[in-house]
Amino acid sequence: MSGWSEHVTAALLGTERRDPPVLPEAPAGGQAADGAADDRAGRLLDQAALLAVRRRAGRVPPAAPVPVALAPVEDAPVVPAPAAARLRRILGGEHVRVLPEWLDAAAARGLRVPVQSLPDLLERGRGDRALRPSIAAAAGRRGVWLALQNTDWAYLVGSGDDPGGGPEVWSTGTRNRRVAYLTGLRGTDPARARELLGETWAKEPAPDRAAFLATFAHGLSPADEEFLEAALEDRGKDVRQTASDLLARLPGSAYGARMAARARACLAPEARTERGRRQTWIKVDPPPAHDEEMARDGIPFHPAGSFAPRGGKPVGARSAWLREVLSRTPLATWTELFGLPPIEIVCLPVPEADGRDVHVGWARAALIQHDVEWARALFKGGVMVDEPEALAELLPVLPEAERDAAAAGLIRWIEGEIDLLRVLERVPGPWTGALASAVLAILTAAAGRGTRREEHLVGQLCRLAHERLDPAAAPRLDALAAEAGAAVPRAVTDLTDTLRFRAEMLKELSS
Image 1 (cartoon, rainbow, N blue to C red):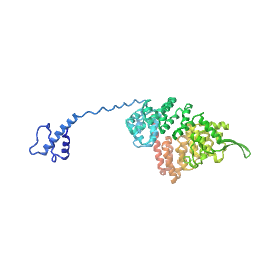
Image 2: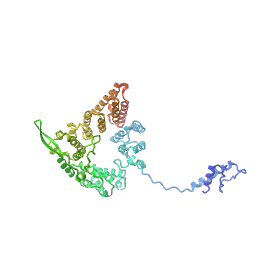
Image 3: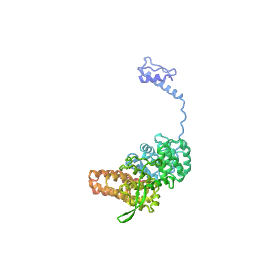
Image 4: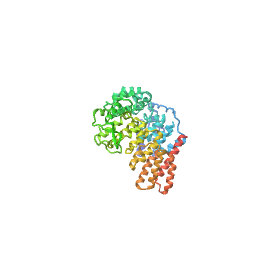
């Protein structure tokens, strides 16, 4: 053994410069009288072979590796072969923006990703957080199993419905896996989930408490009220905010009663005579001050001018408090107070200075409480034409059959490229029916004008339409291209290609 390093040195320096040592057990044959270099080189190789065998024979075998659990059996069938081939093309960079749609469409059809594509897919999700929920939905059980073998892909474990384990996950798992476990338990046994969280609540870090409490959105019921009310006193700001947001969704809660009392102090019916006609107006008196009870119930302080809705102008402190109070007040408060249906309430006259705050507050309440009748009233009442983004956020509340027409009517009200794009960014796909027609009309008009500003609008609109416009609109874009001839914008031809690609993709997944 000790001669191995000397043999290595002789091999590195060359046998002409360093004569290798002679081993007692070396093969017979001896050294040539003249010490020829060929004899030294041969002896080096013979002795190295002998030493190598000796080293291997004396090596202690390593400890047995920890066995890896077998990959689980899949319940869901794999996607058809043409769809699998298209997925490989997408992962290779072809129309990669449609990857979330491919994954969601596969999961919606009860299909899963082929195992051969899982490594590339999991690697892509490593750098794209927005893609992870779609991966979790379509990766199947083997996707989770594979993620357990590579820490770079650990994000998948617990990001879907299956946390990758049994009840022991709650005691030993990571935060993501525990959230997934609690989410699943909330769907089957909310009381047990609440009990488990209560046992460890005081020991959990504030970020974990907020994440765990958010799972109460699943299976939320009056039985959760006591726990949520206690969480309003939590030392973690995010925990308190989560608790107040959940309580605002809980019908018949004490929280809702407190908000209704505040709201009735802010809004009241007032009889007025205008032009000889007796009318009911809405008298508005925003909260005069911010107190500790408001803070406890999740209404931020909002110093004057500090609150600005997304894309909007800053509003005063009292206006911001009013919006917050109304957004957390049960909408039944107003039908009881005014004795009218929602469509008539939203059309009641309001002082011009306060109308926007009132309607925005009601829109947020309709979103939080998922109230279809109020959402429909705010769309049809025509009172929020100056707040198109707030209305766009209400679209998911409407029945699916009404969304396209409502969104089409909404974008027809809008004037200005920036507002149009902001609203459409909030309109989820697929854009079909009347909405698809309205978007295509805007594209046709903008492409026909051909100015630099319109080219920018066409480009940005096509960027959104790549993933959201109904693929059936491709022939109508062909007609637009035929009319424009050589002047058709490149963005439109690219959009047409993407729509055809998506149409073939969805057909393959449905076959």
